[in-house]
Amino acid sequence: MSRLQEVHIGALPMDRLRSVIGEDRLWAWHAVAAAARDALAGRTVWNVSSTAVGGGVAEMLQVLLSYTRGAGIDARWLVIDGDAEFFAVTKRLQNRLHGAPCDGGPLGVDECAVLERRWAANAA
Image 1 (cartoon, one colour):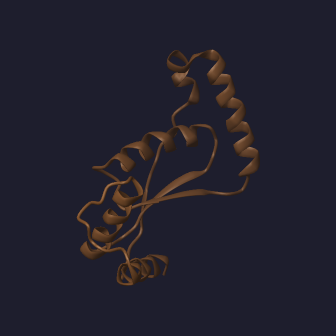
Image 2 (spheres, helix red, strand yellow):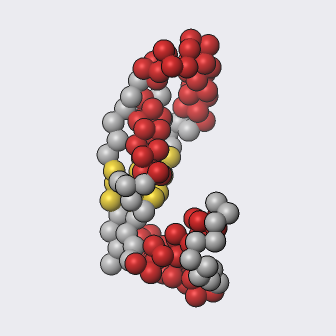
């Protein structure tokens, strides 16, 4: 049985970055945020990853989602459950997406079945 874990994210005010990005970029960001709020009204943007700590994705999501939430967009984060076989396949896939061969292991029908089984368990 799989278990999804929601990572609770606070909100950071967009204006906090004024001294870093400057006034013009801040106002442009406010305009984009307003358009996004209108386009996403009543919707939630879900981000799904395999860990909440200890990796580049987790570090980026923590900060980016804080600013997204600070912009008034309902963005949330789920961490999926997996086993060693699942994470081995996802690591191969991620490395190949970035142009690295990783361990050279296959990404074929069997690996697809591993992913689909775990996705189905998490979806349930």
